[in-house]
Length: 189
Image 1 (tube, rainbow, N blue to C red):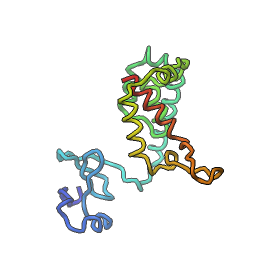
Image 2 (tube, rainbow, N blue to C red):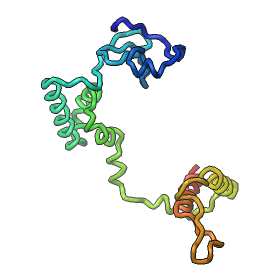
Image 3 (spheres, rainbow, N blue to C red):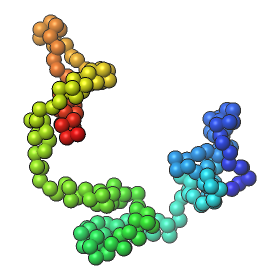
Image 4 (tube, one colour):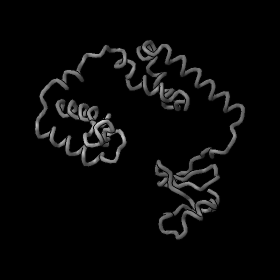
């Protein structure tokens, strides 16, 4: 590192000011201690890793490598079933090397098997669960919780009707939908 020892920043007074000046190490979401604007980060086990700062420009070789990886991933996704059957080790190897940021949402969709579930026709499970009788205890709890927890939400709050002088309440637009979802979930579980 650059001469600054990683230490627990919670014990330092004026931490935000010092962090803004880029003097102190900070803890990242992955549990690493890092110093701002450096190329090295140190894990909590004191191992050194090289890292690219956000403001560092990539050289042309890195850009071409990234574009090649994106191209390979797109080809692999186009023939996903074939690759998973015959080239599973290649898929695993590319995952370990890292999925390019632009491809990541689509890659995770395929890696988790989402394309298989999306291809199935709707079986009407939700409508079936809604038509079943729910346990009155759970339905009362759902109604209580919605009224108690989401009273401030615009799509769940009560609106007064202007046609009747404001005395009659219209049902909130999102409340019944949320009740239906929670009822179906309570029937399943």
